[in-house]
Amino acid sequence: QVRLVESGGGSAQAGGSLRLSCTAGKYWNADYCMAWFRQAPGKEREGVAGITVTNRTTYGDSVKGRFTISKDNAKKILYLQMNSLKPDDTAMYYCARGTSVPCSGGLLSSQYTYWGQGTQVTVSS
Image 1 (cartoon, rainbow, N blue to C red):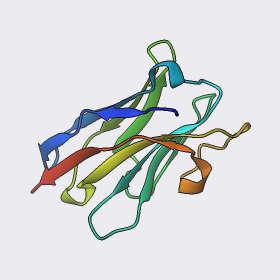
Image 2 (image 1 turned 135 degrees about the vertical axis):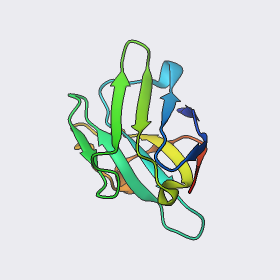
Image 3 (image 1 turned 180 degrees about the vertical axis):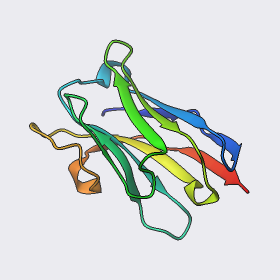
Image 4 (image 1 turned 30 degrees about the vertical axis):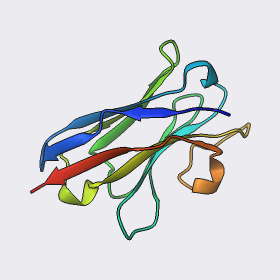
C-alpha cells in the first residue's frame, strides 16, 4: 500500500503563509501525477493544485495566484506553498498520487489512487 504523509499544517493569520509537504518515501514515483486537495467541514473535497510528470501545473480558481505546487524528485517531496491565506482556506489538506500514464494533473478526485491522511490548516481573520 502506498503511504503518503503530509506535514506543515497549522494555524496562520489571514494574509500569512504556510508550506505543506508530502513525502512518499519508497512509494515516490516520478512517472505519475500528484495533487493537493482540501476538505472543509460540511463541504465536498476540492481540488487545489495538480502537477504532471513534466511539472505542468493546474490550480483551482480559488487559489490561483496565491498557491504554488512543486515537487522535488530527488528528495521525493511534494510541496504546496500557500501565500495570502484567507479564512476560507481553512480545511484539511490531502496529497494524492495517481497511477495512470499519461496523466493530466487535473483536479478530479477520481484521477488519483493513493491519498495521505491529511494535515489541518486553520486561518484566522
